[in-house]
Image (tube, rainbow, N blue to C red; front, side, top):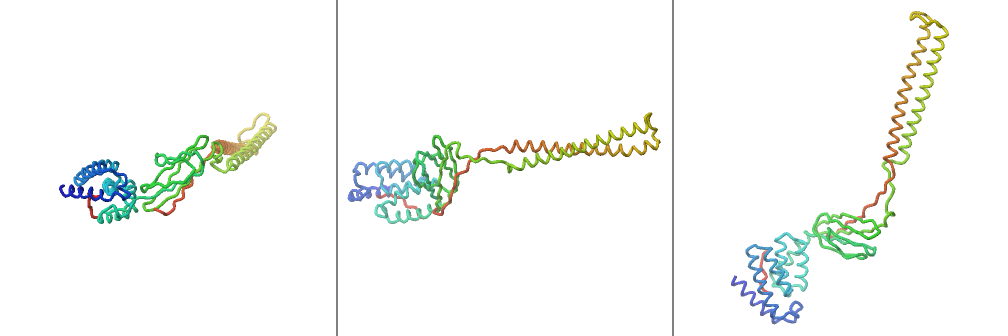
Length: 317
């Protein structure tokens, strides 16, 4: 701890002699001293592996004095806490002025982290040309349209939602690969104009079933009429040949019996054909009902595009 304190004291003196640098311009001696105390507190917590507590101290320090060295300690904490996207964003700020505000070892470490994080995060570019469209990415608001904006995101699936009064809301998912960039464009359509009338089957299919059922049922009806006519002919023939009734072994009865069996057989066939035709008609009616046109709305088009060390605590800046 004495080593950290000594380095911190030297850092304050060094910073005081470099007031012309961008990261010290406008910063008072009191601010530097306050930031130094918070930095030391954060370093002590970091060495105790209390990364969340250390992060809080570093954030307080950088709020007083946004020095690249303090910012890099924030990066270290975020990496330990597995918050790669935030770490990358803070690393960009830590390296804003290059190597000048950092010790050589710290700068080398920062460059190593930069390569490491490059493969652990991705970029998502969102394009929207319509005015007044509100966008959210994973539930977080983006800048309103029109325009183009890029966000650093973690690898995986992300959801973009666009809304505007009088327009159909649109939701689109996009997969971002680590080290790559994905593009997504979203466009909304007015209410009632974006739907496409779709059917479960081609419109002619249910009508073919209905028509086929009607033909089969009609054929069954014809057979039924024919069978009924045959039976009537049989009955008249029996009445004419045997006005007083025919004995079972009467040759006249035997000759007419085949005519009766043919009529009854045709009647049974007619009933079967009618049943098949009726079932086809019922099926066709159900298909017509299920095949009613329904409005369907196209999804957003997503086009992915390829884009996508040794620890040394910074105690001096």
